[in-house]
Length: 173
Image (tube, rainbow, N blue to C red; front, side, top):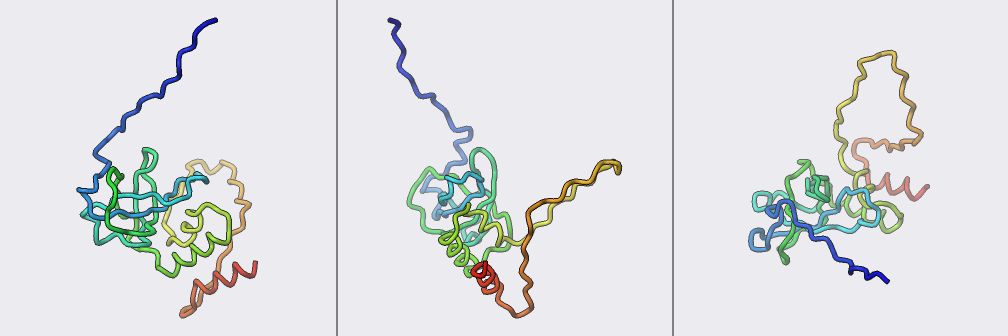
């Protein structure tokens, strides 16, 4: 009978060890919910807050972070003094507007009630961004099929509470 070799684990090294921070370098760390698209990775991840962004990153800030060897978007859920080292650092602030505390609390209530990817809820309360439109140079191309999903909008009059209107609509459905 032939002998089999024991299985061994493959060693891997980080591509850029400078992206990892130590607790001595940074005073604060942040819990960030990441736009990763993977359903079972829906918990917040902890990132180091660089000193140059220390006063700018607050709860509700939209940030650019490294995740799975690429830069992605995340939302800061909490900021606290650093307690652990070896964290990846937040690269930059992605939007100058932070999500308000009322909208964050509404999002947390929705996450308790509905089963969905957490970042999908947070994405729905983010301010809209302008995306570049693709223009085809050939006018003879067939038109694209329309999206089958129905968009729902809530009309908000000046002085009305948008959180209350959204909550009322959700409870109605």
